[in-house]
Amino acid sequence: MEWFDYAMMRFIWWLLVVVLLVGFTIMDGHDMGIGSLLPFLGKDDEERRVIINTVSAHWEGNQVWFVTGGGAIFAAFPAVYATAFSGFYWAMMAVLWTLIIRPVAFKYRSLVKQPKWRSAWDWGLFVGSFVPALLFGVAVGNLFLGVPFHFDSELRSFYDGSFWGLLNPFSLLCGVISAAMIVTHGAVYLQYRTVSSIYMRCKPVITYGTIVTLVLFTLAGVWILFGIKGYVIDSAIDMNAASNPLNKTVITKSGAWMQNYYQYPVLFIVPALAYLGFIGAWLLSKADKPLLGFVCSSLGVTGIIATAGVAMFPFLMPSSNYPGHSLTVWDSTASHHSLIIMFTVAVIFVPIVLTYTGWAFRVMRGKVTKDYIRENEHSAY
Image 1 (cartoon, helix red, strand yellow):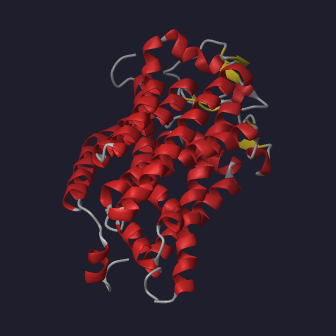
Image 2 (spheres, one colour):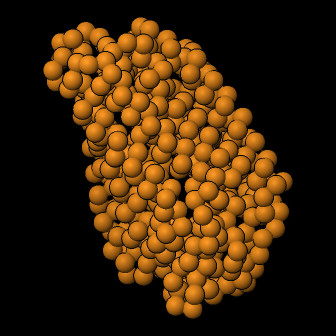
Image 3 (spheres, one colour):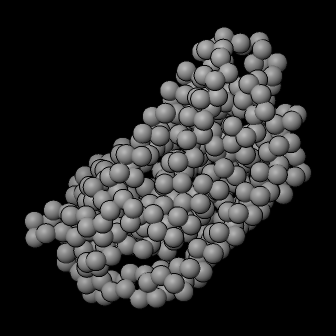
């Protein structure tokens, strides 16, 4: 592949989408983790306000990662976007409905001094945080298994499954991994931003969250290796040809999802990063260094997401009933010209977004305490 040819641009956009998904999980993920912990770690209204206000200054900005990731998939891989939203329609709607609850809960929760009112919105924040975290993992699990869809001769996609078919044992396992990972990540950030009793309550959450995340992550890897047939392109494929998912032959075989790791052993660094990151976060939490712990948990999140991406490459959305119709990096992208234009825009604006995000977190760093809530009774969430 040469720089800026069609094949290279396709690979670059696959890499950029992975980066955006990792960014979303790190940035909006710790918000969701904190929202999931809110009803359990906050023992009274004041403590719950402390918890909410650890993310009050940047949760809206973190949502941009979700919008940008979805937009990148829509623009760079339109066939994947269209097929996923038709096949996962009700799951996507459940995610969107629960995500709608989150901003309303943030804004309305503390407007009325009534215990039932505030408790209802606290549970709204829990639902709006935990359910998306769970369903995102369920979606990834279904990608490993293959999604029941096919194309007709005019490349119109048809989904042959149902919503309940998405809730299979392996996908639910992936959902629990996703939720545990995000809750652990959120607990590390919450420890960094709080003091006293809330700070101490975060420690066992991080301990048990790390154990659950890594044990289930290992179990999923074993299941993929021995219990799930992966997908392999079994024909020549022109990486520079116009996108057409029907111009290839695909077979399924046991252990195929490990093929990239066997071919390039250096890639085992990626899943190792998941273990090192979360174990490092746990040790640093115990050592009362939660800021470094948050860096480590971010690396752990990166390792888990990248492990799935590397295992499936070049597949993006395998088809379980018509394997040859599977969508890959090489046959489901926008035009070469479109990818180059979008890449130019990304080169300009992604560093700006990263710089602004880093600056914003630096400005808004520091502990949130009960005294802060009392001093800002009417302006804080």
